Length: 286
Length: 348
Ligand SMILES: Cc1cc2nc3c(=O)[nH]c(=O)nc-3n(C[C@H](O)[C@H](O)[C@H](O)COP(=O)(O)OP(=O)(O)OC[C@H]3O[C@@H](n4cnc5c(N)ncnc54)[C@H](O)[C@@H]3O)c2cc1C
Ligand code: SF4
Ligand code: SF4
Ligand code: FES
Image (cartoon, rainbow over all chains, first blue to last red; front, side):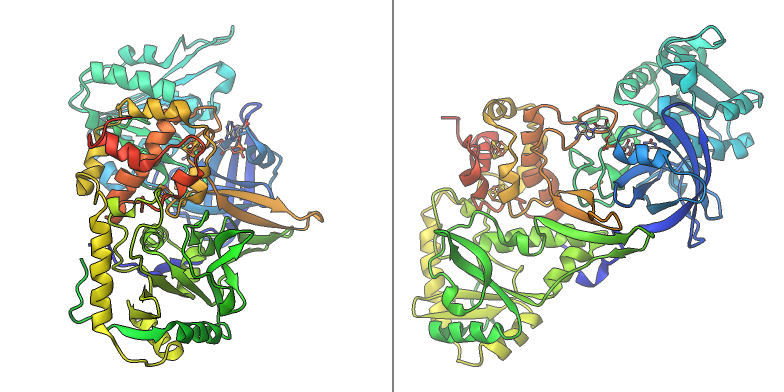
């Protein structure tokens, strides 16, 4: 039987964004800027790490942007935006006090079910480039209570040292010690670079991984997660111990417009965070 | 097959129906089949005299009344005042056919599920849908009989059966009942006429090939034929023009764009039909394209019809209306693709 159409449950605010103010701006690189914004309503986003918001500049457009701050009470949250097109370039011109418009949070992130499975585990975060931005929400959250994990390893790869996001936070993480380790690598080092050089997969053998007790979380471009996943599977990590967060074109964020579809999956609703075992056979994953 | 048991069939003469439509026109906008530049189209009429008697498949489907090709969803001012625009008007859609009624069921569910889309649903809420059953296949490109979409269960408020000199009708819900009482009046019932209609319909459709082989199992069949050579073969001919999507009554993907007024003081956010057959549909800002090859896009379109959405909506999301077949310059046909995929036929 087909489900009954319930016309009364229509949402008149489905596409209506709410107003927010920019409260802080910081440039990381030529292309990437950090923004803190506050919803004018005073409402808290109440998000899970890994979720995203639809960000608008009226007259220009709307795009999905990851929430980079950990879940917190309060009406402020953080994003990091790479200028690649009309909307994101316009966002880069905004300063403190300017309006932006927000819908969300949307998508399926690291919800309580997943988070519960992480305690006691070795968490292996693997971020490529701007992939650190969505991961940061979860990383900063688990660092708050690092004792409940066996170990926290963060592998971060960028093209050049200049492209590293949140450089001062990375330095702080580096100095935590104990069960927290940060390994960084760049494709094209400069004279001041003291870390590793090469591609991100070069870092994997430098971490001691017990496939039985490790949970990996990967965010980066397709070419990166493809090879990272191959290496992790070679280390006998079960598919279900691997999580990935995927980027797709998104227009609505709520399962209507069809742009984000990866075969039958609406990435905006079921993702962007996926357990790899669920999508391993999907033909449109890479 | 629908049986007559417990189903009241009322009757109304053709002249009575024309008078009823003119009465409706005082309270509703009425859209019906009408002639425009030698084509029949679904459009608004001002009088029952404009309604065309003969049915020919239309180029665009009636989905345009509920999901317009372009629709304003937001209006805003430079000061940052944003308003959701949800427009609908009291409307009667007269004379849509079983394929389009079944297509509407898919659309209704798509826009109602999980996040109810007020732009679509308010238009449905504000409309009365009057269907007309088909007694035979309308042309050689239609293949409703291959997906059983010549059968109507729900999806309209009132269903008419054309018996030449008169219609008999049944209402499908309370909204249809109230409407029929108000506009059609009471003109008695005629069960015998329905039996006669049904017999003729069954006899006509009995001469067709009937449903696709393994119709109910098509989602599984499509799931396991993602590497079938047919995707590459069809891709060689496809022009990626997207016409098939524009005319399809069950395609509901859209793009969203902002437009500023010339004075730069106000603007609108619009949604427009979009097409997964266009090459940039699944591109992301970093340059990746997740369905770069034409073959990937044809496979996606067909899997939406017979796999992904069929699982979701419990009916094929292709209703066999044949519009895409008529529109395609490369002669690509979902019917032929299914027949080859299921092994029912070999490529000619
Ligand atoms: C879940 C999710 C989370 C995201 N999180 C972030 C984040 O935290 N930070 C961030 O910066 N970005 C993030 N993104 C990416 C971001 O949404 C895009 O970069 C954004 O859409 C860019 O919008 P734009 O209007 O500026 O550029 P667009 O107009 O989308 O164009 C960007 C670039 O891509 C090219 N392009 C656009 N459309 C096409 C096309 N059809 N074919 C070929 N090329 C095209 C343009 O030429 C331009 O160079 C995320 C995306 C998703 C799906
Ligand atoms: S109408 Fe035909 S040629 Fe155009 S995109 Fe569709 S299948 Fe390809
Ligand atoms: S795919 Fe073609 S035949 Fe099927 S419903 Fe759409 S337009 Fe009609
Ligand atoms: S972004 Fe529109 S359906 Fe997912």
